[in-house]
Length: 184
Image 1: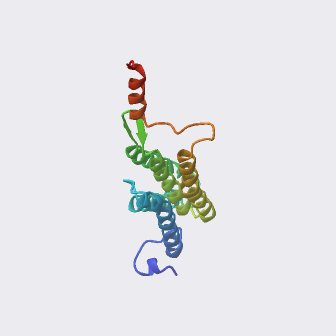
Image 2: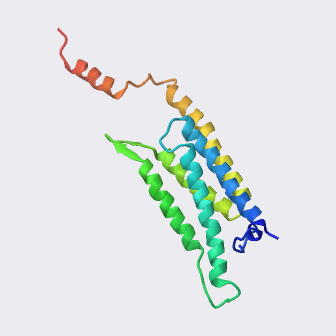
């Protein structure tokens, strides 16, 4: 017998232990990818990613419960659980868009926004019980966030053999001004 039902809760499609495991898995996945943003002092850090992943998992679990409640044994009733997952995806995309800032022709926060969107996807995978997909998705995300970030940093700071280091934008302008002035 399910402990939750014993304590007076409603009967659920999933046993309480399984639902708890799915939520816990979502917290772990969200924390692993959110830790990178936290360590880099980005606005959407550890707690934000955990909450996004946890909420997505919870919405997914609720979807299963509502689907069972509305359809049950009656095959003439229809319910589309994918709609709730679509709503979660759109909601997380809205939050992620808020993390993206454009200023003076530069765009900031794209990686954080994409990471938030991924946290939602991982949460849905966990809530649906797709632990393998969530694990692989988290692993690939960590490779992208950690390993590729290091490679990008090395490539950005190391000039090519046939190229001199490029001056910063402000330095370019001052160098052009000096070149335009006649030398006496």
